[in-house]
Image (cartoon, rainbow, N blue to C red):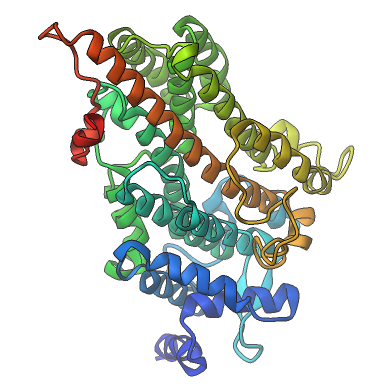
Length: 462
């Protein structure tokens, strides 16, 4: 009876105000840090984006996810997955060590947030979803834009669930959505080739090739179709690599293969990236299965792209996008643990990073040229500049991982834009080389397996 009572109270909390749960939680975040509600204009942009291109029920799904977040607190989670169990996230984040919890929402019925800045900073991913909707020069089809937008929405909600609740279900939602962020870029990149093997298409030897657009839709809409205790088993059923690091290494390897001699890429991956960033089983797969398949692809599709085929332009753009991601990883706390170990020992790394980010924005922009529609970092001055997420002015200096959320949200969007351009360069180059082989009836078709899955062959022939 007690559990039923608190659940009913939680359900009533947003309906009484007349606001959807997503907007209510954004207001709660903003009230806690800025003593005012979340700006109407920013929520209107986000809401419009979630309903763009004929997308249905995405906003409703996020409302359900946030309603269940509050409910999960009031019920204490479950017996097997209690609220506030730090061990669910492995090694602790700095905010956990410092015990920076917060109570947000109705002062007479507040809910607990276990890591305050690491929680609110995930709104930066919502802002990147809006960037996907607002970007004017996409070349990928609408289905891909929807998938990228839904991926950012899922990442914002999933990561906030993890850091706000410190539960196993939140952690699984988080890690899967982050892996999907990188998987989307990887799939767009590799589908412009003749890749058709399971290893190359999925970066695994046990998953079925599934377009990221389907994965993004299913993960973002999960709260509509499954109760919270069912989320982990449902996420486990998705044909998705759940550790983003191995997909990130594969993406770097692929980008290197398209632009540089394969021997250099092999040295980079086998001797540097795989040993440093992957677990033993992942390293073995990358070196002994993925890289040999990638080498065959490079030979079959005649990579790298020549400098006069657009290779130089793509190389510079990729350097800009990857540099932005590397800068974000400085503040992730776990990936480059030797860097985060300096926090508080020699200097305030987080404050230094927040102060330096505007210049990093400028330098990466000079390389990749992706317009900054959010008035972020160096490009300040607009109404949005102070609202990458509620409390950003404080949290970007106070929490390293919050700064990671802020920086990575920007960097992944810019990676999408660069990969979009790179795909077109590869497609155009493949067309030219296909024409050269037109008289050879046995010539290979440079049409990737994932492209066939989503029925985009026509794009290759126009």
